[in-house]
Image (cartoon, rainbow, N blue to C red; front, side, top):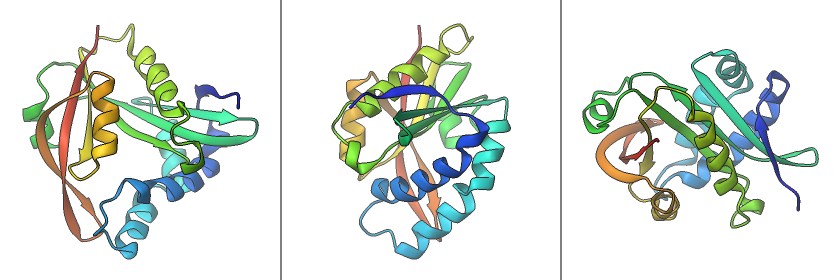
Length: 177
């Protein structure tokens, strides 16, 4: 399978929302209710949300595709962290958030996430950013291993609201050259 990673376009909003609805639940801990997952998706990953994300100058989205099918996406968010726990944990400024790294389950293990991350990290070159950070659920060992292999290290913790329950996340940071 030939995979191409490119900047997302406004026309990708519907496909991104569909992919997000499929992939977000895969990153949730087992105790997360279906209602909580669906509420989070509705509030944060709708077509309208992606249209807003794609129009926001502080955000960059990248998609991995094979033919017409989207296989995954990432989202970078420039700017000071709004969460006080993240702001206290992230040591290098300015920083960029790696807000999303999601891959279709049929493409897991095929290098799609690594290629998306490579392109996303390359997009930070030429910026003033000195670090990139992300939040990952403390129960998501697979994602933690992936990020660790790519130079991210745990620097703190934060909470993340899904539905009506706060989840515990690690804050991971990676220096940028």
